[in-house]
Length: 259
Image 1 (cartoon, rainbow, N blue to C red):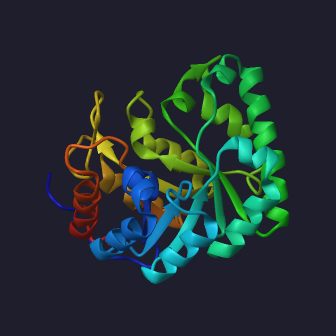
Image 2 (cartoon, one colour; image 1 turned 180 degrees about the horizontal axis):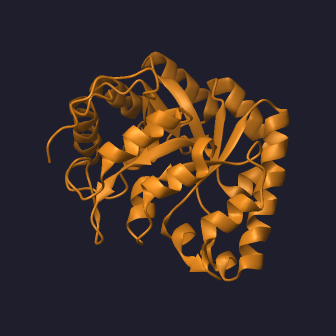
């Protein structure tokens, strides 16, 4: 695949790495993991738990690596039961984004169920907004299942207010079940505040530039809208060692003129 040789524009978001991509390394030694991420060239990371340490230890390690935090993935149990602590941690990291990374797909069986999920996320997002934070939902394939004629994700988003719930669109997990990420970005416009980048085909994930996803059009459309704050690499399956996998993704973003 040819590189997309386009210069950065004023609407080109900075690049971040979702630390779930190096989850085993985080569990062994969080500080060593984020140092290695920084050495690759990533300027930002998105947290997904703290591996071998806690929030304070993660903050110290991220600062020592001279990284910044683009956002936090926080599971629904913590969002329900520990929201004040989540707010404290977001303030600690200087992160304006909090994202719910998934939901039990059995709750999506009906339109009413999807709407109920959206309403709960809206309530959580309203509380986070009052604390000065932006809240989003991160999709997997299940949010692009069709329920009663519409995507699950559309039911959820329509049941919530844009000011309370944004969209962290995982491009590959939209593409794999057959949705069109470009159309989704165009339809939801400024509500798509972050994009998760991974590549692949209909069978499995691959590193950026090694799959079928049309990232050129996706980036062009997103940057024309100008609402996306971060391009976030997240590799969940690997064709190389995890740290090499995320390095290859970063190098591809450089080749595309986005890092």
